[in-house]
Amino acid sequence: MARKFIPFVLGALFLAGLHGGALAQQYPTKPIRLVVPFAPGGGVDLIGRSIAQKLNEAWGQPVVVDNRGGGGGNIGTDMVAKAPPDGYTLLMGYVGNLAINPFLFRKLPYDPVRDLAPVTLAATAPNVLVAHPSVAARSVKELIALARSRPGGLNYASAGNGTVGHMVAELFKTVTHINITHIPYKGNGPAIIDILGGQVQLMFSAPGAVLAHVKAGRLKGLAVASAARPAGLGDIPTFAEAGYPAVEATAWYGVLVPAGTPRAIVSKLNQETVRIMQLPDVKERLAVHGYDVTTNTPSEFAALLKADLVKWEKVVKASGARVD
Image (cartoon, rainbow, N blue to C red):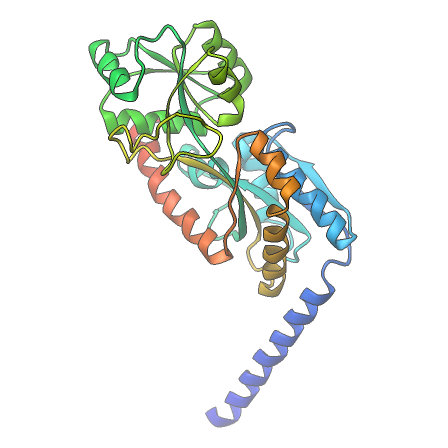
């Protein structure tokens, strides 16, 4: 009986493979929706629209960007997690809603590992520690010494509780054993206005939002939380160069689909998105805003997500941050 069953199973698997290959060859045959789980205008939106435009041009099917902000990215992410796994609903994911939110919110309506399938990373951006010129520190070591001499006396701004800027600062505090006070704002814009005005002294930010101010001398760039000095950041050293390699926190952005999407379609999406991200005009557009094109395989993206979930769980718990 078992011997008769084996050919049947093998035949079914073979037919399934043929079916998946045929699906990938035909795909896409109708419009695709790319969900950006944040409001228009931010980095996730910029990268998502760059990809959508080029997919549209390559495949001749409309790729509609659907901004579904709210809940720190949870609303749009949940929408994709519950969408049909057919390749026609994509997510422009971000380290915040995928690797940090699971520990900020008591209960999420989705599981980033179980309910979503990674396609590829698209871009990364380091976090830069900047200071108002009035801060009497020209390096990370001098800043740490200053903070230790004035526990709680230095303030740092963020775009809000639980944002990447907040969490990187908490990582910095944990590694260096200093006490600086968090001042959360409702968005990156108001936070930058106040650090420029001197109402707050410090801030971790993506380069695109602060680099022009550093070059103009309105802010001091003290260190960048990446393994190596990214192009375009001038002479700003890394935290590793300052003696604190554990302060490494690169924000990443990538494409995901609902779990269960056929592997052949995931592979086709991966190949096309990787090709798009290497186009000179896409790389140039993102570089102007401080983003580095960074792509990988679905399995590599999955490994990164799992590693960052472990990393950020420790940071969030140490910070005591909660959003709900």
